[in-house]
Length: 154
Length: 175
Image (cartoon, rainbow over all chains, first blue to last red; front, side, top):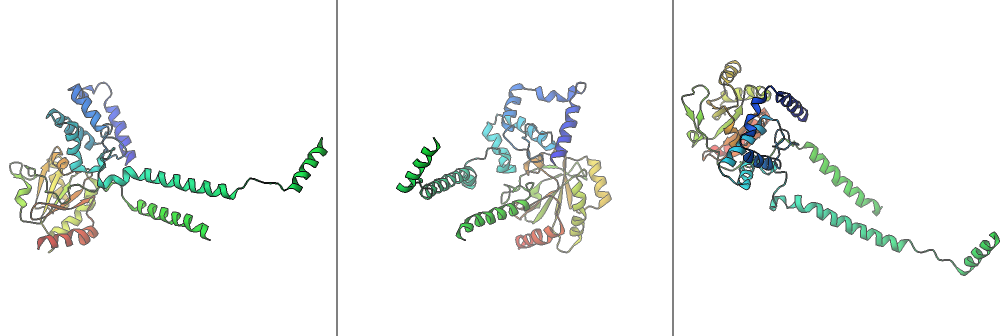
């Protein structure tokens, strides 16, 4: 699917070469609307090309949804209302930055829980290791032998 | 011996998670519309542009809304299943939503492969599709007597999905 999307994007890129510039006209329609549209859709997932944002995808559905977002902005909807519009139809999955609520707690807090578990395990391991690896101590006889050997050397 | 229990346990959990993850299809996004009223629309019919269709017309019935298009490859795969279903005794009304299609293409397609639909609504610009959160045709919605969406199938309806999910649920809702 990703590859199809890339091919489509490539085709669209060629399509937008000078000469067919007329088709790009709606983009420059209203720079303020356009800017807000891009800002909102950059954080939304295109459901057809799932690793692309709605702002960057050349999938037909993404184009339609960008048009829909433009319409909603012109109607005077706030950014949050636009996002809610899409979430109510396509689900939380469209949000690259999911909201914090009961079904997404694991998503938000999970990594930190894993981090805490990891740190605790590390601390436990290091403590246990410290008790196992004792400083080497020499008996009196051994010490004398070492000194004798060192002197020998000189 | 005890030393191996923990790593082995972690390994087994990991394998289980990966096994489940491999079987999940990232393209199947749970619809937020389940158990919500089917969104309203009012668009011309495919066969007769002068007559409109709205889901309200189906109030009191358990029915299937099937989003299709003549350009959609998987719809070809699904179509024979729907045609056979529409002729079976267990059939429920199936309404088509001809999504982002050309009228003559849609009509030609039905003439060629058979028409399982009670009627098809014509969604030329895909606005109805957006209302229903359509992102990969074909998609189907099972709607109950009160007009509430009870089940959504993303991708083609297979005989298994029909037998194991749609029909039992439709029977239950029809009671």
